[in-house]
Length: 139
Image (cartoon, rainbow, N blue to C red; front, side, top):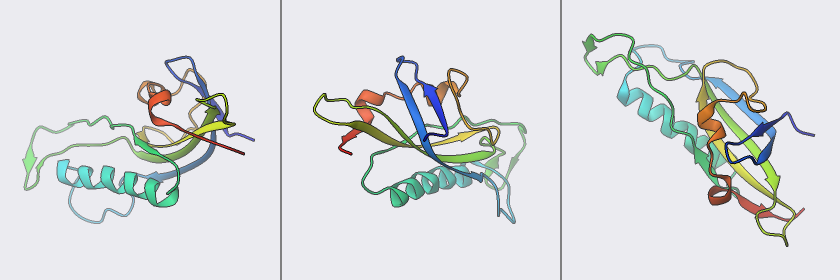
């Protein structure tokens, strides 16, 4: 059973079968969102995905970054990532006819804690190049 289906820009339908969400800035006690902190958060999310699913390829969707305040602090200007960090296990039809299914772990950031679905999913998430990134497996 899947949580949702997402239609990629290529037209391929993929199933979201597992989803992990967390607050992008949860647990941040001091400082402010800035490029060095955000770079670590992005790397951490990708690392979490690789550690959680070591036998499946991982793709990180580059996050959007906003600059709501032009004033620079000690670590540079304020830079904000979308508020929800996500790791999802997606699967689809096999890439090669001899195999059963294909899979890909995707790490991304989004604005709200909604489950991505259909053609309404975030454009960056829908633009994944499945045929280049996913890996076939047997059931």
